[in-house]
Image 1: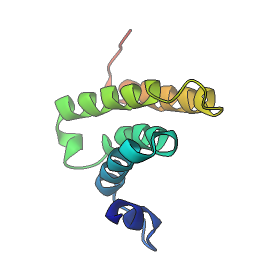
Image 2: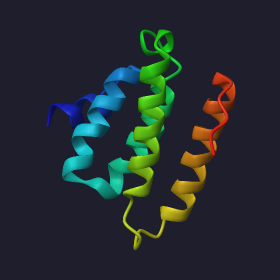
Image 3: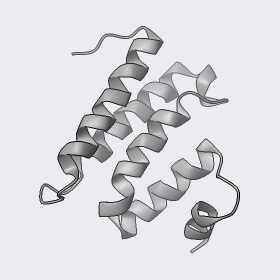
Image 4: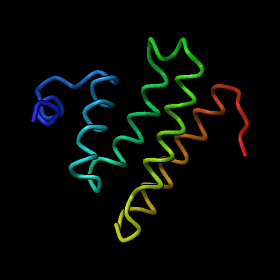
Length: 101
């Protein structure tokens, strides 16, 4: 309940709060929160203190792809979500100077 209140509050959550809230809520409602979790994980890699730790950035980027892949195949927005998440993931890797296959 607290995570829902945080996301619906009058002030936007910090990147860390958004990531944690979507991670928790994805357990209850994956259809809604897995895409948001993936994007929140990518966004968190751009902020302190994660910004200072390349290993954490890479783990969050991997988690973003895992969350994206976990979106239900029957979800009508899956293709759109995967495209956006993979684009953001690739963009962030490029910003970090990492080329992955």
